[in-house]
Image 1: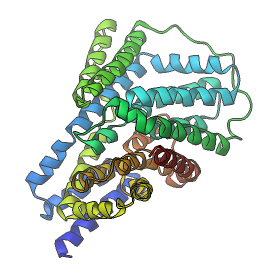
Image 2 (image 1 turned 180 degrees about the horizontal axis):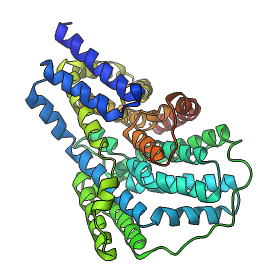
Image 3 (image 1 turned 90 degrees about the horizontal axis):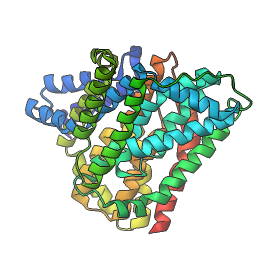
Length: 416
């Protein structure tokens, strides 16, 4: 192994470690960009290759921009407060019922708008619901975080990682549902039961019933229409195998401009509130992946994938499990990119590729930096004055992710 390869791996490991551990409590983006910068300055990756890697993430950037604009527009015009009051009223004073309603809302949001939307759009509403109902917020916030990954393979649009992994060979919707409908149900149900059990003491008892719900403003109604319209748009474009980024960005921009024009407000207000740091974080991760790819790691992974695929069922179980835990070591976005390139070279049986997708989608529920959606969730709860440390999330993730992964992979293997 050459000195350049060792140096590349060392820099990437340090950068990914910084994203995971956040030394000095610096933002995750700082460490990703620092790692990419060191690779460039040390000549371990050429500027052209780095720029190509950054450009490869264009669809993801556009998708995130659209979702974040939708979220901030909805927040600014009271939609989250209205949704929160509605959920709290329908809980009828029962904390367990409020927990169930939040989890169900997460299933719908993740399925039709993606796991990133659940982190960005739903999380503020969940915190507002807990505040209005005077309920313990963390169990409800954990429900929001975990369902974002547990339901992220119901449909192709439920997670951008699905499109990354399958690339231009996305299965038709009927085939997709045949492979993932039942494993998704297993993932969702087992995650709920495990989380409900581990949080049983904090969600026991009653919550407030004397909750006032102000009528939804014109801006709030327009924001809600924009979110619903975006969900419909994403379903349509995914059916035609069109990249989701640009339609999402256009829908988010149109909603923001339309709502602001309706209420005669400046669009700069929601724009300033967007967590823009997530974009350089994603760009930095793409550069790190490209640098590692240039060391030949993709070919090695493809060879391993071919070896385990000799026995498709056993290979699927191994591949899905390894990628599930590996996604927590380096975030599921770069892990998904590696898997995608390895799949393109190895051409494993369909069941192995499906298991890889389950692993890259569900596995990140183990740790707080396992997926981009969970990082976005963490940023959202910090804005509300809450925080969750790595160990605190790991205690919940270990109890919920492992049985859900076994259930989802086992269900997919039984389908053959």
